[in-house]
Length: 385
Image (cartoon, rainbow, N blue to C red; front, side, top):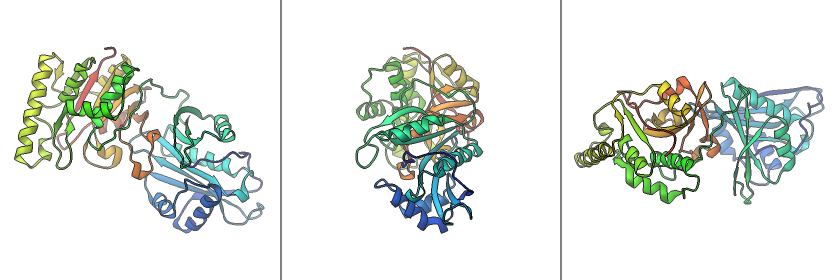
């Protein structure tokens, strides 16, 4: 979103106070937004929603009496927190042009980092206009490192550069696994498989066409409404047929997700599809273990150069109790690094909120279950083709 234009980050003269924004600040926040940015502005309605949101924190800075400024809010910083992860994102930061160059931006940036740290986040990410070399140099001087580029990010077509800073620990998580956002509500599993395929084959023609093709090859589940999803046997069969070496770990031998469907006809289709995938998995000699996997097993696969497509509860990721697939592909000793193919556009998220997410081990272990029985399912992809 909007990130501080180029300006000094020296300490402001005199006193200042940083606090959480309230609804009483809305008029001033809108005025700062309109004065600081010619486009891509946050609306009054969005400001109100973000101030109240549990997964966001909006900070404002105000000069104290005697500081040489009027007693009004001079700038703000807004930080978003991704559910279930150790990631925060600097969504927007701005100082009113009348107060520019006096160091208030630097104080807000530090306050945003402190807020992220206080929320137990280890990484803070942001986007900045590619044509703003002063701001880019500023963030680099504060320890932010480039992690990607988003073409046509701003309304005028300008690209954004993505930056990241490690707030906890000295070594950032790193992985060569490419990220792809799922383009439909029902293709999280195929999107994860496409990411795994792209890591093994950088020349892969990845995109929506392949995503849907993989969905057609691995779909077995009818949800209560809408299109079907995937289960581990279908994903493993599709992975094997495309040259990967999958193993299946699932905590039950029963057919999966049947309780979520009331239609007898749909259940019959699901039963036939799942039975077929299991027959094909056996014919391909795909290893299958009917037991719950452990966190250490996932870590071991990653340590050996592999990946794991893991079933999680969507409640931990985006607040909905639905089955959801993520790709686990890194481990720093305290966090599992995942790609979550779901990007919540309605919540203002970008791929910076969903790629390379550090999830604390204990949190990952809790989220990697679905439903009351605590279903555990994963497709382990050993390194190499």
